[in-house]
Image (cartoon, rainbow over all chains, first blue to last red):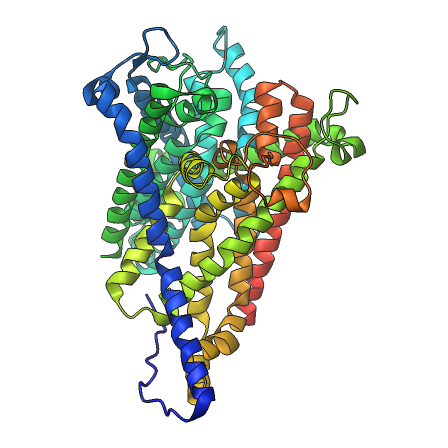
Length: 305
Length: 286
């Protein structure tokens, strides 16, 4: 990282009042910026503290094992049961599905943008991808509700199309922009010599792409996948609109509830232990996201080496 | 030249090539389908009445004017708070910080903030601002939640453009006897203004598209709010995205939902174009 910190000589001539006021201003501005600098750290701490404090009581009351591995979530039943394994598994399956559908498509599109397309078509497609990344998630949810859910229902002849499969498709579309842009950067960063050497040895352009460039860009592409996982696991609104939102153990064509949608769908009317359990669900989600961020950092670090 | 390549190899190459083109084609078709679907279903329902009235059972109107205003209020409030914080943080990172470990820590924190899903922001915002600070479900609480959420964007873009300001500007300013803050204010910040504007535009995009973080902080009300009540606690209001969700999921009014979706799509397009324009200027200007 290039930093532009310039040492200001400590010797200052203290002559008169003007000097003094400027010195005070300088000192206080320096303080202010230091405080601003650490505010992000403060926010992270604040979020962590609030989530841990409000998320742990319910886990303690329900019992860690029962909470994480319990397969039944019935928060409003007379004999309430708070097992979040259905949410965890749905989140994992949904994310995996989105990755399986979205990542190959995204990487191939990144190859197109970086190596195959001419300047004009590359600009056109990357504009399209940019626009896609800016579209709000509720809009994806709405289109999913109106287009994807009925289509899934008819194609697979189901009573209801709002299920895990529809959620996977919507999530796959939503992670495409991040997968494409990170992979494209990674592919463009592969040294030109690799390509030239491969071409000189008689490989065709397509062979070079798949046998030389993609392996060389491996860790950047991996980073894009991890980023996609983070996006998919954290998405709430779009999933809520297409997944059916019933706390079942995941089935491909069954109505499911993710970790995110569990929080979103019950928070407004929850109370007591149910509310606390929702905070615990959020805490679990937070831990997942932190773990994913950690992996992402490791991947990026390895790439830099 | 290609004569020497065996047939099976040629088939394989053609297949892989086809896949690449197919992927690009699918993505373009997806976007085209998305845009056409939204505009086709949404544009006919954008009427004058929709844009200028509030939802009322008595008058039988379905309007989104309160939601448009709420979105504007939240954008303004968020930017007013996040801009000084984010720009200040970037200035610290690029101009003041001497301790490499501190910089690493701050960058790690910023990345972490950028990765946290918005539903968690919504929950934490509810805990911190709505309950702990007892602001109630209000636009103010929503805006403060979004401050935390957009902070990484502002810090990153400002830092990027601060890095492009040549050191000679700084040295020149200092050599003329300016204090450090004076030098930053008069020499560095003006050259980095394009990056700050880009950050603002990107943040506006994020705010316009945000829904999960606002559901429990800014609430779902559709009342018309004045300037003053918008910034006081306990005045809830839903933005365009939240109201889209309510219309589609809770009330099943897809006509209004698609009208809002079309408006959001057009807004996204405008925001994208202006971000691109600003970025281009950024490259040229410095």
